[in-house]
Image (cartoon, rainbow, N blue to C red):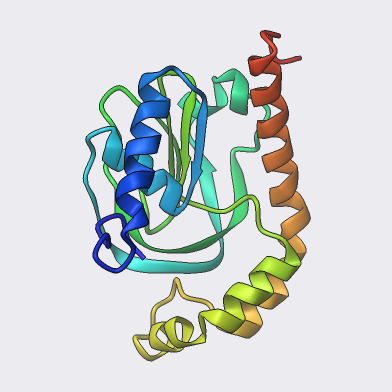
Length: 189
């Protein structure tokens, strides 16, 4: 689904209102994949089809601006993460770009120091990736027929599941730092 699919998914309108209210009230918000696209939309940015779909385990490169932020300060310069998206977004005005991949220049943003949008997945598990592959076979087959270099086969995706622990480590680091921020503590160095 996409951010403008309200006709098929009417709950998207309420979700956008909820996110905008959370941002405007000063809350810390983390959106992943569609969540990042929804955040970009409510922050006034355009969401549109990426030139190529990106499905599978591919690297992202974190920007110097990301690595300067306390939330991301010891992230690696590059990490192999899980992707399953066909859309991308423009950065919200004033946002810090966080990462890019070979085929998607905006893989994440930090807005107002507390609103985080990640196009890629760091929350996946071996089980959730397996379920995505089972449920998304038609989309994977279409990517294979289109000979996309950025849509992996089910076998390639499942073989890449060894990366799940590493991406979960990134997620836990980010969540720990967000938790410290909620408690008014400076993230430990």
